[in-house]
Image (tube, helix red, strand yellow):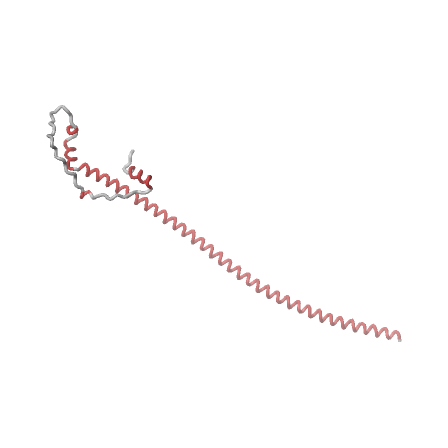
Amino acid sequence: MVGLFDRFKKNDEENYGGEMVEEKPSESYEPEPMETATEPEPEPHMTETSSFESQPQTTSTSSSIGIDALMDKRAKLEEAIDYVGVMIKNLKDKRTKLEKNIEDESVDIKNLKEKLVKVRDYIDEENKGIDDLTRKRSQVESEANEVGNIINDLRNKLSGIDGIVDSEGKKIQSFKESRRQS
């Protein structure tokens, strides 16, 4: 079955786009002037059949005043309007699809942005944690240095005491030896 829009669809498929043609409104249609016949019309009683005789009288009359052409033009205009309607529907569908795609992308981008904000917050939190650890390590290191200094000071004092004890021990030893010899 041949559809009303096959002619337009074929053009659309070949050219990848419809072409809109401006047509004159049907009110401004002026029928072509009829040519007046210089020959007398053949009589119906003639033996030859003419094309005129084979058509009904009403068709001849309606075509002579241009109604057939006007009806054809109206049918073509209706087809064109229907085709434009289909084009409008297709454009609306495409726009709706684009709007949906844009909305989907917008949602995806918002989700990514939220994830990036969470990652930034995590990084900031980790940086604060690292700063805290660095500060705590510095405190512990400072305390360790203090403990090391105290240990060194006590070692020096112990060494001094050990020296005194050794010196006193030697004195006592020498005193004992000097007593034995006397």
